[in-house]
Image 1 (cartoon, rainbow, N blue to C red):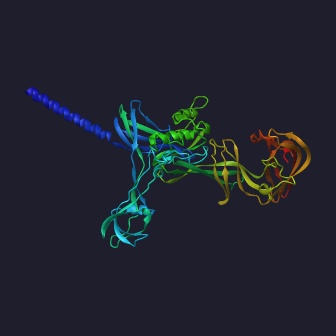
Image 2: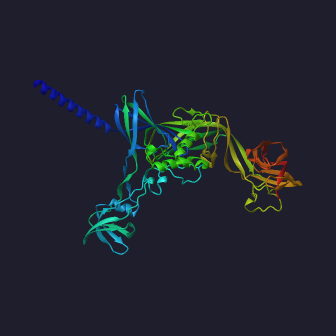
Image 3: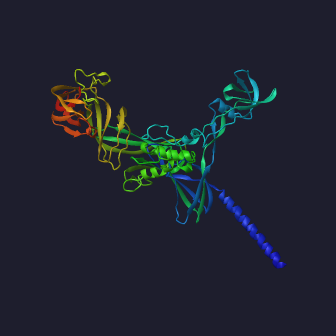
Amino acid sequence: MKNSALLTQVRLRSLVTVVGLAALTDAVAQQAVDSKVVEASLFKNGLAFVVREVDLPSEGEYLLQDLPAPAHGSFWIMPESKATLVREAVAFNSPRSETTEAVTLIELLQANIGKTVELKTEKEDWFEAMIVAVPKRSTQGSPNSANSAYLGYGDRWGSQNVYRPPITGVEAVTEQPGFVLLKSDNPATSLALLPSDIKGLRSVKGQGDLALSFSRSTPGSAIRLKVTGGGGKIRLAYLVWGLTWAPSYQIDITNAKEASLQGKATILNDVEEMRGATANLVTGYPNLAFAEAVDPLGLRGDVSSFLQSLVNLAPADRRRQAPTMAQQVMTNAMVSDSGRPRLTVPTEGEVREDLFLYPQTDVNLKQGERGYYPLFAKRVPYESLFQWEIEDSLDPQYRWRYAYWYDRGDQQMPQQEEVWHTLRLTNTGGLPWTTAPAMTVQEGRVLGQDTLFYTSPGAKSLVKITRAIDVKAEQGETEVERERNAKTAYSGQTYDLVTIKGELRVFNYKNKPITLLIKKTLSGEVLDTSPKCDVDATIKGVWRVNPQQLLTWEIPVEAAGKLYLAYRYKVYAGR
């Protein structure tokens, strides 16, 4: 009996232990852990490669809230320790509640649910009633909805060459209140009105003002993470839309020989909360093939819409293939001829292949905030030039613009030539200058603003300051000789071979010498120029009837001086 009683006690204790362990396991399974953004590489097209970090105390199951909508194929879970193994990660809908201000009558009704108010309709004057409910129907994720293909995916931004951000957050929900449920005491009745029938809403005397803020549910997702082998740090890495940066420059030319070039960045954060994170500001042209498709773990749409999003990313001639082939098609398109993936996103350092980074440490930005961050300040050599760019005298229909019969219309040559005061900056640093607005100042006063285009280390870049009002320019061309029907194209079009003489004149009314940079685009064969200039063939004219050339002169002009230039060329012109 004693042995039996002892055995029963052991069994009871074991049962209590099992129940206790089960309860402990269940508690661990329900434990929510916070993740923190530790690093983000920001591209200028609205995308960022984000790395979050979470510290797990032990193995078990955990909940990670507020999962963003990552680009397809970019979401990875990486334990810091090799002993820690991620066995499973399950994404599920986890709507978030947020408080917002009412901006429409429907939202004002929602903000005052449970409150007695006075309403007015088209047919009835003001009457008292309590707002019982404003039912809403959400179409998010409905497999049979007409717009299910557009919940996070879709083909609504036109050309495939234009980046289309995925639809996320509130945009993915379409709420259609069908009626407003009211309860009236005089007479005692319940009634439902169409939202469009309600024309006014006001508070009842003695019951305070109408509430203006209300809570609403926005779509969201969370991850149930199962980890074995122990705890430790785990990193979540993904490509997401809504975190980007915008650079800009200031060029101070107070010094006559060296310009003071300052660069700054504005970080735009619409998706993440950054607390002491490192932001790598990336310049370059990464290949992000799946950026327009949301990863299935983002829970933005159903299976059909996900497969359709992959079809939309494929070239037009492949879109007719069955959706079941879409993932194979896009996977093949993702691999280069060498078999290596094209997607390269740097995670640390300053240079990664053809991508360059400006690291910013200790960035603190909440979702919806914008941050100002200085990048660099350096002195760079520059030259002051006066730039004259001259367009081609042959129009796209191969007609010579100076012919007496030429119907100018909108193609009319400019009456006054544009000569621009321009800076030529030399990048003497180790990092490239990314394309951005550049404002030129002198002695604290603004002179102008232009675009500083991408400039590699050691290269030079031109930045316009302002129109040169003291430098006048004239151009003209004259037909010297014409050979009729000299060439017939494949299309059957016949062309004359015309010999043309061109003249350029420049008048410097300044009291100091200037350096003039002239760039003349020309279709045809250059015979001679005076003075000599650089002649470079352009790729644009390779398959045209006439090859296209770029003539470049860089020549000094004396103070209050004049300059005359001439050139001759042959060109096939239509009639």
